[in-house]
Image (cartoon, rainbow, N blue to C red):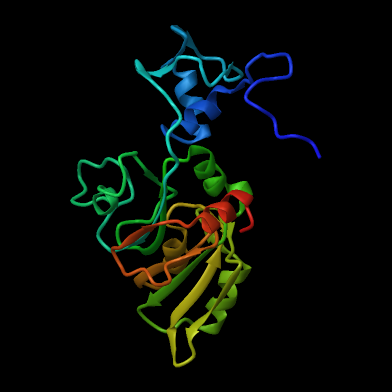
Length: 251
């Protein structure tokens, strides 16, 4: 069996990693966002500013962002059952409440929401300082499954139900749900929708385009995570099993 690689190569030279990965592992941002930071010249390595995206560094290099040295943080993973009225942006001068207000005392590390739920949407939200994982969970090519429970202002017709699975034109782009069904056979204004699209407010826009008003929108599933046994407005740390599941990309 092949031995796991050590921190050094066989010749004694320290192993190098891409600079954007180093930045993401420090908890500053995702890899994609790190690329923009590098391009803008805000990163220095051992006292020299760098802007080359191909730059590689060792774990012992002095990497700084805006003058502050970066180091690998302990990775934190928090699952929140988001309540209505909280925004998922980290800093919003116009917001009365952000989701960080709910988890502010959870850890000393600074965590960030993975993706966005709008102010009036409730449900499953992951917060972490793991930039690599954030990138994998939010990039469109990984097709992370999301399921929402939608409460409409009126009954969803069968014709519109089929239209949602076939595709709805949203500003020139056809967006289709992976699956949609009535959540309650006695109340066809209650709908479950499974979708991979990462477009902003995509579920609301689908139903609004068809002439419906969403009364409540609750995300019940995201990338294998659910809000089971987690009350609205409460949070918990992910289990090791859940963290490993996310990293394996099983969902």
